Image (cartoon, helix red, strand yellow):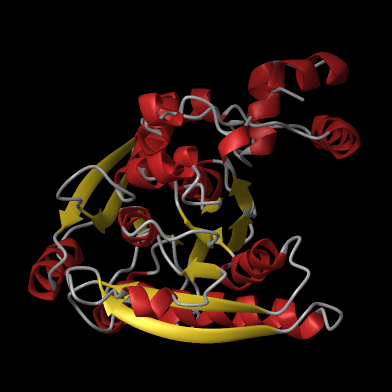
Length: 358
């Protein structure tokens, strides 16, 4: 209920209600009791927009995220963040963007720069585990609300997380690999890493996804026998893949968005009857999905993660609303038949519709 409606019910002026709500005094005990009774019964919805205009309150958030050298996964959360920035600009919210290269030295420099600046909130996508923990440990001393997207760092307490449950997504991948299989099968689990060791994706994502994957088979004892082989290769190593690696293999689970590397190899070598499961709606992944080389893609909804991260800070700082610190996005499975015009539209960069906070 608004101040005007409360004033009308209490038969007092809006100014009187405002003084009572903000405890500014000069109000009779009788009116205080009437107004508080109405608020208790009907509630009070603060007009955040009007309040911010009166107070001229501004909020500035920092976003620290990996910069893609070419269109790819990390462009997607930025799309969601920019959309949120547009939606919440009327509430005095603005955002400074900090993009670091896939380089530890460059990350440390930019993180150090952020530590010298003042912000009301931070959105951060960790890439280098050790360096991210060091940065967050220092940043936490400021008591500034911080939201992690894409991956959580549970060893850092007091920060929020918005993203997929990696364990659950691995569990779903196991179900997809086994779906409809009636006989003993051989499955290849591929970890395709970048040039730098010690990234959060390698040490945390892969571990949780692998655990979830295996847990599906442990919990479903009536399945036919599945034999698993784990292989790790570098994404730039042209000799990392060999036809012999796929001999007798019925299914491949790729732990990250580089599944298109495997799909390309399978297609070029005319390998047949291999079910392929991977992550993310990158353009090359979608191309191989549409032509049938990739069977399933698990979408992490990075655009939604970016949007919801800003929405979290908006609710916590502007609305002063209690919000959960752990917010999992849904595990969405994409197949050729349920994704329309993916190649033409490039799903990673498309702007989805979101349900905005009231």
